[in-house]
Length: 356
Ligand SMILES: *Cc1c(COP(=O)(O)O)cnc(C)c1O
Image (tube, rainbow, N blue to C red; front, side):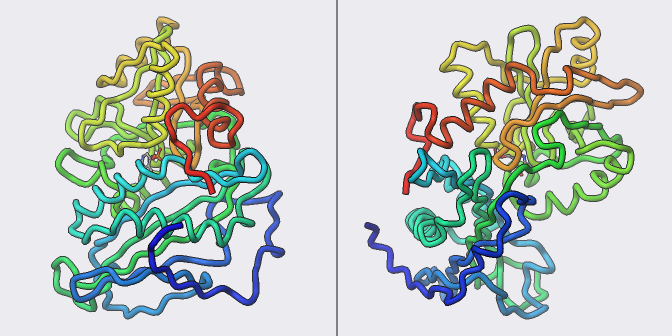
């Protein structure tokens, strides 16, 4: 067991029996407990696990004004029936630490993040859905809690981990989604914060995403901020193209979020002898490959959506329609293998699973 001094205050009233596990929306319901760690006087204090509930704060709390905050998104899965697996915990911690560094949030110790999360998931393990392809979404968040309107790095912070039992991310399920590029809008610029998980990125995407949805698309396909020619990613997923028999994805150039599902796809592809290219992909190129008939599949990859086939990309005056109403064979292969590893049905090749 860990040496971490975690105080635990259990809820006297579990809400588990109120949850309809057959109809889970994404991120609408929360498990019985949460983890809280406070930072003041130059240090993080002992973690506390307490009943999920409201947290007191003042309207002058600086994160509400200037967004000095970071989050992560990861999942725990039912594993071989009786175990629980937190997937790629190390990589999520690494990214969390990098994100914190970028917005001047003091580093949270690795064991507080990892052991704290494990203790929380252990206490709420009945909340991990039993059914395959459902999971317990884990959301760590840290934010500045100084009361000040001064624009500076805060002296006080709060770190929480909350958990939400989830089903499919998109209402389409695993049916193909529809994307459109949005001229005039960008998600992230080089040198900005597109490569870290900070809240402002998502606020900035709401207006263009709403417009895209009014036009009948599921999400925006973001292009590069300078030339508006190169494909970057989709709001909460990285993007992959199958061109001939080559798997192509844009490189981590500094404005794309380095997805852990992206990394998982690339590692599995290489292990299985697939040809992989991380290189800039222009929309013109995608259109040309589509015209020639060599564009076989498009799919997105992210923790929330796992692998999500793309059926339509709209760009300028061109609409690419690809595949049938189902996942293509390459996307399906990744989907089956990744969900298989997550649930313990396919061998875990590289210690991606943390078992409880
Ligand atoms: C979280 C996120 C992803 C996917 O990352 P995963 O680690 O695979 O979940 C992709 N793009 C953006 C903008 C994200 O916030």
